[in-house]
Image (cartoon, rainbow over all chains, first blue to last red; front, side, top):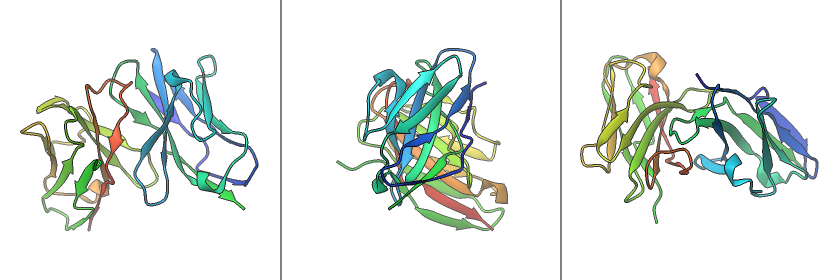
Length: 109
Length: 116
């Protein structure tokens, strides 16, 4: 069985400060990890996936198989980063996404 | 072009009523997913269609839940004899090809179902 844990329900940071959202997973096989984001009054959308190894809107995430983590980081938070963030996992080449409970990020001026 | 659309956006039902939730995926998208998102939780997988074939319904919580996609485009999620625990946001997502994880899932706005 696959499981995703986001230990922080709420995260509040000041504009310009670094932000890190934690994500831990359990899965016995080879997983693919994703971060999805939902801005206020918008729909859920993909932010980034680990296989792309890309930085989106200044966010990066590194898959650490030893620690079974996929934390999301941004060195300088902006007010427009305020949103709900979900970490998700799918078995490699499978469709079944499992989501964490989400972290609400508030970036204060 | 238009994204995934869902209707109604809000539905209030009395316990025991049947409801039908509609999803219009992005035109031409092969794969369609339904998720249930309870308050304070992440989305949970319900079922997966590839064209008109329902390939996986392992996430449907009970036999009161039924989904169909008869012509491989629009899908309907039906809940019979609704219970209070069915109250949730129901999300639909689609992808242009097969549902393999490397294909980004495009989500609709969701239908918020409240069962009184």
